[in-house]
Image 1 (cartoon, rainbow, N blue to C red):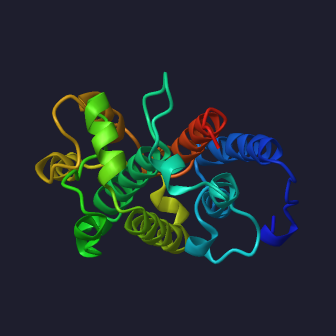
Image 2 (tube, rainbow, N blue to C red; image 1 turned 30 degrees about the vertical axis):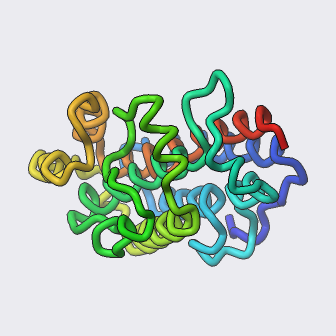
Length: 235
């Protein structure tokens, strides 16, 4: 299925519904006993729709771009009443999970956060996924982070993942995460005490499983959370 023939739904609700359908197809393809190259193609398409268009170079549409279009800086930093997260925190969390898993557990290389010098430009001290942050931490993070640098980090990580998907041999998809690579995640402070359930989840995945969570399905879940936050914003 070629990227340029996927219809562009006119509403965010329509885009979300299409992405849910595509995610179901991708889940089925990646969970097959012997995932094929078609599964990787589907993954590439879904990943492109769930990240900024700038990252993939696709000429189709980006749910994230459409979702955030027109929002002001204060909207991205705000934690709406009764909610736990800001949109800025969601972008950080999604991107950190993708960076950690794709670069430490799949490629077995270095985090983009480190190699790209993004942490200093974002002007924050946090370097983990944010799962153990307190409500005050989330507010402080949301107020402090440089949003342009956060967006640049997100684009850089998405580009790395996009390249990884295109270069991957489908025979790698059933490879299990190595215990020594999970130790690096903890040693580098990418996960902190209190996030053991996430470490256990990642450590028991295959590469195909990580392409689902967090590279695609996790992104969709939190972008849907962002959509719910936007509906509560005073614009």
